[in-house]
Length: 446
Image (cartoon, rainbow, N blue to C red; front, top):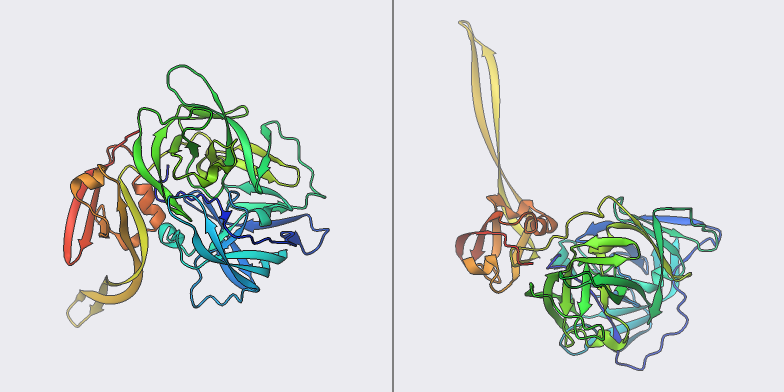
């Protein structure tokens, strides 16, 4: 399970604001059959290009949200939002509601798909800090209004999404596919599944899970529901992510399996959340948790809002192990740093004089200065391998296994902490003006 990037947002509106006239995205030509969109897959999250009032931005495609949210707008992003009013938003986490703006009558577009009367919610501060956590700029989240009028096929392997016109689309015969009915609550899709919570016996528990493409984990389960869901014996406490209302805490563990129809997904990692962090998510009494990108990416997925169903077909990732961060380090992107790089080249020259042929070798050294990524330790999990050797929150990473940190992407660093149990990791950090070296081994806790 990916520790640093688990995003799941439930929005409760503490104002009496009513939004009318939204009809979602549509094809410009009603006879258009399909629109293909390429996406980036970062830590199991789908990143798509989106234009708001002709301004190009990057959004997470999140089936777990029913509103379009902007949260990383700088002074350089001139979007020109229309009909702006204040509103309060509240979601997962232990804090209070946050101030935001609501803007009506905006034009949103994704290639030849347009929404001309769209409402956008603007969180004035980046409470999620997605860009720092993912290493790329993320401006917002979009879900229901983009998906509601299409049959959407997501191919996680090839990183393309096909948006189909439901009036012109016919499902092909597929013996290896399975169809699941979707139920909706507050414009969010839910699927029925079964989970085996105990390693003793083979009892399966029926659960209703939010389909959450905006969550990078495999499964979240809510403790204390009518299903008597409890954390297994083997677990460790962790920060699961950030919601609008603050930090989301829970227990990380592993269960024997989850069943989606006839598909058996074995030994998935699971986060168990308490009633405090999920208070706002429990307004839907039948809900027991969510299913996220670390499960969805193992399938080719058809999400069909018009016909209230989802179709799954296993892909080559189906049997991949469910890994998680075994270091205890929560690393974030912290902007750019100016790095001095040395480029040494050897030049061999051959020349002749009156007596004989001679060779000369010249060593040419050049220096260049470039801006490179800078990474900082955002949090250190208590009693984790990194914590035990003395790495601290706020340390800047200089090297990982003797390789300069700026030569990595953030996703590369995260993957290093998930590779292999007992693998040795060497990290050099800068703390204030001091350079410190640490060494630890990745430790499996679940």
